[in-house]
View 1 (cartoon, one colour):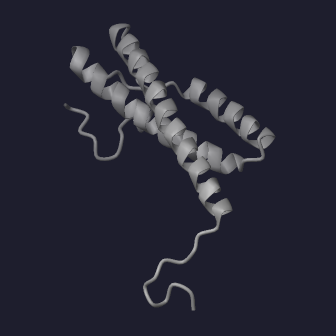
View 2 (cartoon, one colour):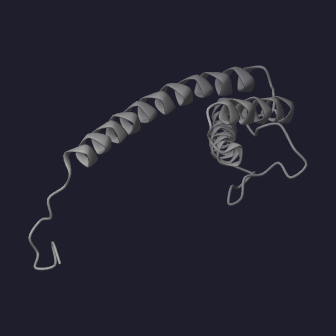
View 3 (cartoon, one colour):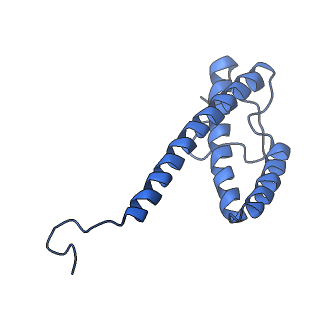
Amino acid sequence: MPGASGEAAEVPAELLEIRRSIDNIDAALVHLLAERFNNTQRVGRLKARHGLPPADPAREALQIARLRSLAAGARLDPDFAEKFLQFLVEEVIRHHRAIAREEGGAAPADAPDGDTPGEDPSR
């Protein structure tokens, strides 16, 4: 059995090439996410200054529909794309609430259940 005695198994060159490509994509995703969060931080500061709520359910619904359509066109599971976007949106809203607290008190109410789990709304 190859590799059973502790020696490194020979990794096919094609596998190494694919892994390098995946690593490059992961690096690009990190940079894209950093840029996205830089922009959402700017949005959060604008919302705080103008007294707007951290969440925008109407925009979120439009974005989910848009992303699901893009995912289907790219042959990516739309459910996965939606879950990914929901994860990002939840993090952005958490950041927006923190910015609102920093810039002028509590964040305005934005949804019936309004609070992120584990977050103290009185801070």
